[in-house]
Length: 142
Picture 1 (cartoon, rainbow, N blue to C red):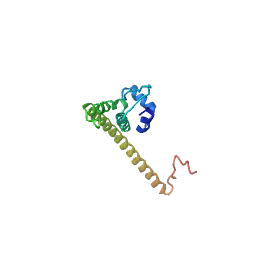
Picture 2 (picture 1 turned 120 degrees about the horizontal axis):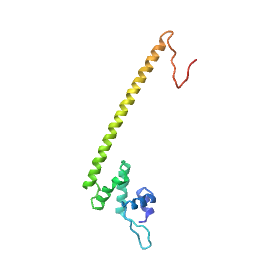
Picture 3 (picture 1 turned 120 degrees about the vertical axis):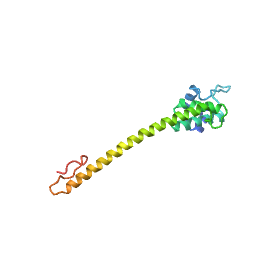
Picture 4 (picture 1 turned 30 degrees about the horizontal axis):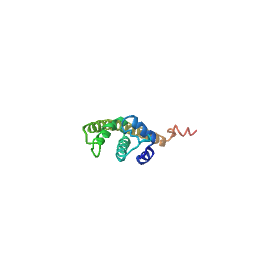
């Protein structure tokens, strides 16, 4: 198949395919007329690359998986180098989850504090002669 058909079937652009070729991830085969030619194996490589990128892998991180596919492993992730990348990516994701959990706890604490402050102001407003409730977004009520 030609580059346009491969791009369409893989859900990408011809520009991306040329980039993958330049990076050595996609083979550069030419027919007698100089046109790039691809086969179903190339489509599998591209689908592997795209899936990994959808999961947040950098393009260079896909290389071991591509090489594993080229070596004949059906899923491209059974080779030692692919497993190393999986482990490293999981460690990165675990660190991000930890960071996001800490941020979430901070935001939840701020919300709880703000709600207590709002409730205290509302209670004070119910006392005769107490302050009138207001909101910095709504402006003053005077």
